[in-house]
Length: 358
Image (cartoon, rainbow, N blue to C red; front, side, top):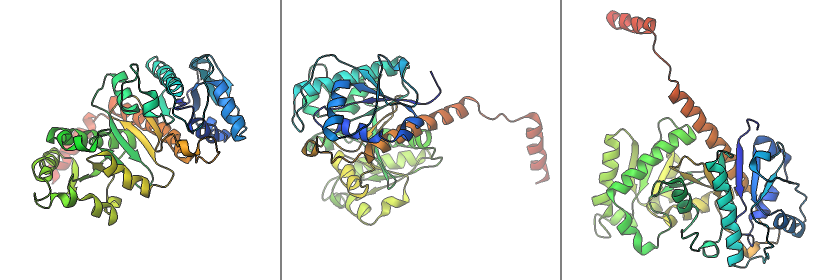
């Protein structure tokens, strides 16, 4: 095994654009020079997609991640049976294939065979089953790593980073899920991630309110005054640079987000709607808060364009870049923490003498 970062890639929903963005990304040989990419999927399905799309990306079929070939796109077969591919259509068969890909990648991560996982999009309804009773990838990885409730969804692009207090919840359930303890926890998680995953030494975090106009002094809701503001105050007392709460519409509309290292939104669409509007096609979803490094493109299965050769692979490519960068950042921070610079006796004496002079 070589020292390159080994990126496990799950193929997602077979009826979506997963294989298209994977094959387009690794059509550039330079991508396989940056890491060892290992797709957990089906060689037959990959060949079907490649032929349908008129692509020429080559890959090596290997029985295990331990056999992955350096400088090549590798494919680990996760199932033998034929799976019907019906572009743009929801099917339990495609959902099962997506789950088998996830399970094999997760097993290899636990066995230390890969360093990170990049997931192609799944259809949540197609994959939902007794084996996968989760509302998405995030909750699945929480369960598999034994960190239920610890995952923090961060959407990132060159324009901004947006994290979420709540993720896949119906809007009617959001207010009850917003507690001071949870907001404080998310602020602390975000601060740690910015430091360890992105090397931001003193991050500035903007916290959004929940209600329109920040509740208009209680006329439109009390969460800002009773929950969010006290949480911000408590975190500032701990030395975390967090500010707000800000009304979401004015915050993004005025460009105020440009002055912060990250934004903490209260719920899914509050953060993702402006993020996707402002980040073009290069957004990445990163699951922070876990030892596992997991990224994905910031788009779904795109059933409406599946099989038509229209999918833009840039978001998936950026997800691969992000996974590589985050693994490297964590290694740098962890090595520095494990081997801190020690102050020598001579340095202590020198400092003491300088203090005496002053």
